[in-house]
Length: 117
Image 1 (spheres, rainbow, N blue to C red):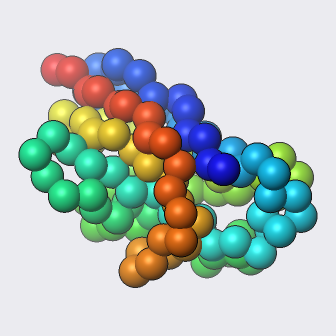
Image 2 (cartoon, one colour):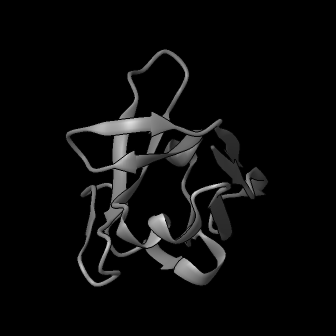
């Protein structure tokens, strides 16, 4: 089970850190590729970032590159998404998932991020 948290209402230019914890995964979490996606109102869910099991390989959507950073702490079974310099267009429900850009095996519940001007 994946649980995302850390969303909120912020102003443009602010920062937020999202967390996604995999409960009941145990040590298997360290073998998972983990991804963040987001879905804005009226739009399809879109890829944001992925971190591979090795914690080294990371990829980002062009829209967030240079502003967002994905990381993981396998000891805590948690993946993070540090979001800096937030923009209005970052407003969305953010979801974490076990998988990668092309395939997600299962999703966690989302967390709402709202950026105001």
